[in-house]
Length: 570
Image: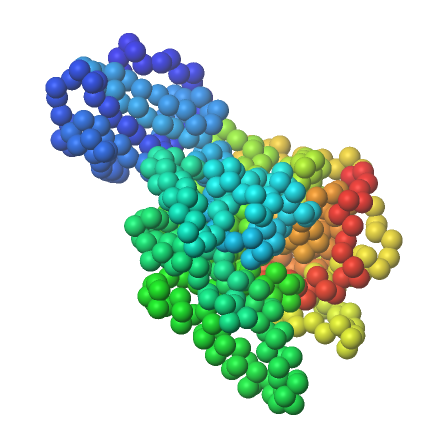
């Protein structure tokens, strides 16, 4: 290291290399042909950047672990550099205790969506449904949109929308403005500034009108030239209107046969929308139908899933993750994002028996806690979910992890009335709604005031059976409670009252079963020396997941929506 190297305070906290950059001074005539990082048996190539022979760089995901211990400051991500003969080597380090979600959201804090469509096609309602905005979006008025203006919602900060009106015949100015906007965004370097996806919204034509206006047809034909790799999805709106018309037609004709009616819906949609689209665009353009009615919530989920999959393939996995975080319609994508982020760094460390030296259990659990609540992205203006009191509720009984768990009595189902049918496939969903109904039917038992972190969380982290068991339990417990909150407060705001219902419902539904299963795994894994903690966490979460198609029915079982504004002390 040269004299230019900054002085680093010693620390016992291990840091990991997340990236390396090698930069030659502008005045240097030398070129670097090859670079490689060697650490013990590890070898990692460092590649040329945009200017061959001049600069090289490499990013490591996951970061290279357990290096630079005793030499660097543990406060988050830092850069250290050394200058040798006009060449600078910069090493970016990241603390093992740093949240994975923070890394992702610093790189791409919002999912950036361009929505194109005429006034009246349902764009603003679609946005409210996909991202669960709880009030009319006054600042997002159709017909007055400026594509260069960013629409953001205070109750969901993880997305931004740009709105372009449709391109009517002879409206070459609006078409040119949209093309210029897209070109500028494509040329921006930062992922957060790029357009991540385009929704082209078109009403299903029901009165013999044409599907496309001339400008929209031209845009579709030139989409690859205009958009490049930005995925576009054609969204046929007002599907419920088409269905209602066909059902009315069938009743009036006296031929209301369900099988024939379903076939008629498919044929009509193919005639009005899909075939005309293929004639203009070919067969390689994504499309789906949506309705904003609650009965058709699955259509919104399908659009979100198409968008996420396409963004991951053509844009960046980080942008796809941010879409999973931003959307509030698909519980399955929330669980999936929790697993992806958990698997990137911290949960993987548990599976590999990593000792996170220099940290307490509270440090470790705080990182896990932040990752999980960031993924679920609830409207939580008072930060109840980040509070020590909520962490204390999740930590409840965790210090008893080494005690034998009591046997769980058989679950007793509440009687379901014929007037309110419910199709539930998962035991967790059934147990959860049973517990919620029980809580809502009577006086809600108060939780002791002043809930705080239990003493065991203050202990230094050591990789023992008990600690592994506690951390695995915390991850599964927290994820299950997040799912129950998804049922109770889809639009928020999150209140202490709702949080307490969710944690109590989980306790009544299956908390003991979960703890017993994890305890059994840990006893077996530690005695045999075999086991995969990460695999067990994933399996436990999947076994206790509410399926996306259950959500609407489960919510319908509640006697009206839970008052998310009602609040009380912890």
